[in-house]
Image (tube, rainbow, N blue to C red; front, side, top):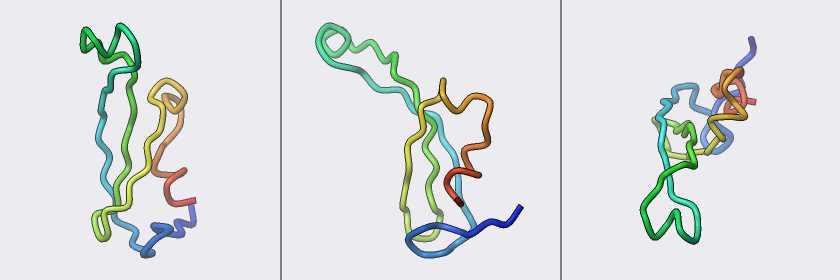
Length: 67
């Protein structure tokens, strides 16, 4: 695999983290966090991209981040 690096700074070091967020309407009112994402962040410059956890379940999100 040929990793291109972060699109902002070119670094090839990144971290992933899972986060959950509320939606709108009642889910926001009751703090129901049903929107789940994987965040990939460059450890050099901090540039981050969010990926839908359900859509990217079978994929390596680092491949998307590095191009």
